[in-house]
Length: 361
Image (cartoon, rainbow, N blue to C red; front, side):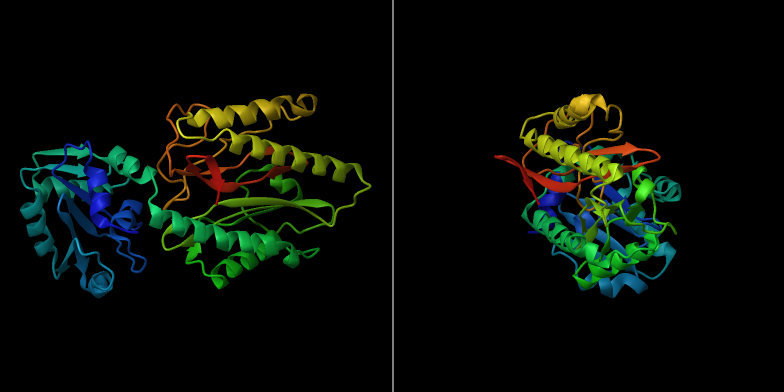
């Protein structure tokens, strides 16, 4: 389960930093959640110093009691009563040291504060160390991702019950989000994508006032969040199909092709394989199947790492990915074909890399 010291050891592995500063702006750095395990509180504009022995969190009076109620044993919490006290803490912990920062996230004003008040010997970027630490999921992380998947898959299994002719994409999105929370989610991993008809040809279409009509695609790309961890699942349906129509036959074929592509992609995932192997196998299949009629219609990577962020740091399944897959990595597998003016199909599941290959979560 969650062990703060194990995660601290991971992020310092190979790092030249003496102390690492995790800094939240108006948005919380997901590495803050990785190291604290906090599931409550806002903690905006908050600093946390990470040493090899533990963490020091500087909390405002507003957040102090919330932090104390859920802190790991290795954490010290300092209650801030003034900005002057924070400045003194900067000098005490950072002066003359090699200070690591998450260069890909830290607000510029916080970087300036570290230089001005901390007077470090050197500032080094540890964003890669943080990313590598989070690549491999421990038992507790996998359990939370599995719970997040259980919730969203239940919602998507039930979703067709709520399809109604004339309803809008926004209305269905609201129903899906409500069901996620009802079944135990802490929130959504990202804004739910609901795409009716021709809108399904746009991979990141956001729900609008488009109304549902019979014999059309319904593409739902949604994810629930459970104790900070995400899921990301996509299903494509045909609403009230007219099975005698040419349109239905075309839609059904697209669904069958994408299902076959996903099975192929999952079969290519194994420890030691490059992240590009599964993607390229699927892309080649989709370009050549059915006489090449879907050539060039698969327009994104096959999968991305999943964890605290829905696009977590780690090896993805992309055409240029040379990194090797490792045991206990978690990634999505989401082939799709998209025909603008007609519609699109995407099927997505989350998998964990095991000694036996990919296991669908």
